[in-house]
Length: 81
Image 1: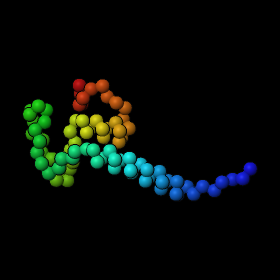
Image 2: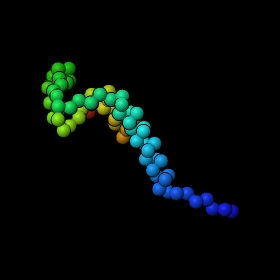
Image 3: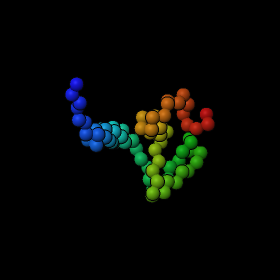
């Protein structure tokens, strides 16, 4: 039986490129907020987002947690509910 030479570096590079394309396709659908202030929680609080930070709303946050980070789906919206 003949052994096939597989270049591990090129396989890893191809996998990394595929993963990055997947992340990019998801990120392009998200709305990021930075260097601004937003009313959140039904206008209960003013959230100030500094220039060096990014915020995504609840819907996009769920996308980040579940689709990008691989967390299991949650039956609730938000934390502590």
